Image (tube, rainbow, N blue to C red):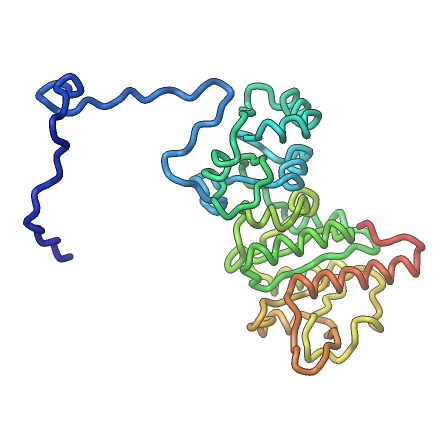
Length: 309
């Protein structure tokens, strides 16, 4: 590493400095750091980010829907909650319930919008409320399969890495009653603020299952009576006319790369969504939403009510 050459300029010194402003040995005295007012949020030393995680995985959840869903989730462990005065008034009921549930284990502090932005990032749309949280425990696939019903719906994502896409898929999964979303341990996003915000509460409602090997996980699904339907542009069967009865697992790949070979080999049938020429594929979260809607519509025509597995 090269050293910076001296510029030859003398360092700037403030003229006529008052000796009273200098400490021992003529050095400028440092002002005392004031402690934050009790019940008020302290601005972090460095500007935070919703994607920054601590050693234990803690991160900031932000936005009305995401934070309220986290407060209502008994499996969620919250550490700290920041809210503007307006947000404290608007959500007085849920915040009071959180105080009763957590007691002193959860610090609820009033903060300005800028103070919250310093924790979650300047681009995050926090809506005046944010909560520092630990990641949810990932359930075992075996427990999901043990609790599956006759018409359960699962989603399996093959290396979908965009947290906004995974969050949007969780939101659709919650809306249409999917039992779980399965992702790979590697090449999938960790639990972050942007993922939770995109999920809009779906992260708290739909189990996010992480597996080491997706191909082996699909084999386990088939042994449990699930039909694994691969969604691809080259599929032979249109989604609208496909038989979606029984236990269904919709398998989706990342945009561009699609499904990997071993994942494709585990799919029982290939389903396509006809699109206009020139537009080969949809965004993966949009494709997931359409597939879930068609599944719910098919269940509604059979049972009279949408699938709630």
